[in-house]
Length: 251
Figure 1 (tube, rainbow, N blue to C red):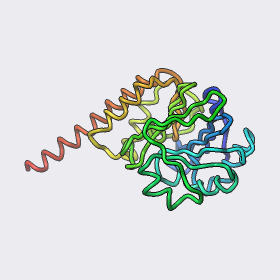
Figure 2: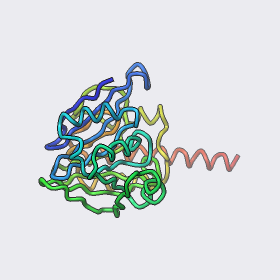
Figure 3: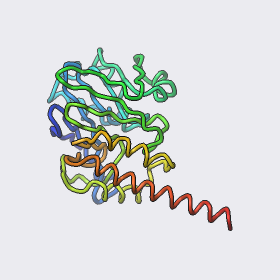
Figure 4: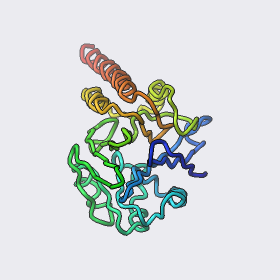
């Protein structure tokens, strides 16, 4: 395996590791994102067993010890499995997440005290970069789920939203909704709940210009339209599940 580097927006780099053995024959990517500023921030740590690959890739952009902030979507191996390895090589770095994630998991898991981020709180990392944390509980899964939004570039760090298969390209202006629907059909990874559509439509109000996907290519274009279409699909899925439940009750 190797970790490839691509700049997907000004000062935002995608570190991508392709694993062909997951969902063959097309495979699956694991993506981290480095936001460059006076206090660089990395969104996702990657799994612990991929730490060396990601560390060596990041070192081609900045010295790893310069890393100052570590964020992620929710508490899960591919989001934050290598957190303590990064904290070890970057002595000034701090893990930052929402209240639920910190109180339930990070206070115990992280080797250094994490920072609690309120919904909507902004970290100004300097160099014109401002990263906002947004709570998205249970969307797509995990009660601690959240995303980050870099305001100057209009980049939404999506976490598992829009998950898709393959290793097509680093950045696309094509369809990311259809492939995400196909991945949901295959993996059924989302915690379907009635609030999903509303949560995702709130993200659409940001009108992001870039969607940074954890699994799949990043997207450049009308991020609001893509988010609304994804919300529509989740509404459809939730409605179908509720209909099935009512039918079982009536049987």
